[in-house]
Length: 201
Image (cartoon, rainbow, N blue to C red):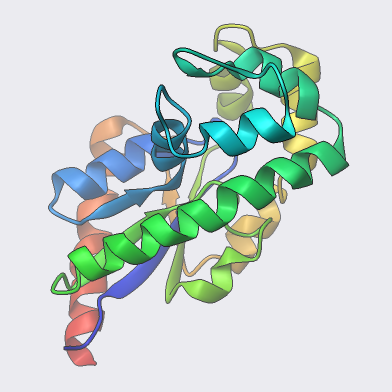
């Protein structure tokens, strides 16, 4: 059996990637949400809890990872962040492989990966879809989030490939600077195009 067309869905913080991922899912396209998998593995009895507690003592509790405590340990510390990623990334890769096996019969699947370009994940997908919006819309969305500050926003942006570069490297761009209805129409049209492309192979 030929495998599905693998689409990497990415976009900088506040660009609306999660909304677009939900639109793909609603249209019947299986979506692998890397962030959701990480959260599941870090909740109470999650499989990553022992390794995270061993590497970062005091950062887990009965409910799982204490996000604020863990965030303080890795925020701005590249070495600590690399240690955390060495625990998390291989586990996510195993979940992704299981997802692919489960949906082997689908024509198209989506890997929702926030740091697709930053972590070299683009090489593992067939097509890249970048979700983008004007910088003013992005800033307004992010700064409206609870606990977000200008400093945090600037730091997150510094870790991400700039939106302009993402757009250049994309096979397709979904614009969320318009209405939700317009974005949804764009996604439906894109899915039809991807399925048609997959059918040619």
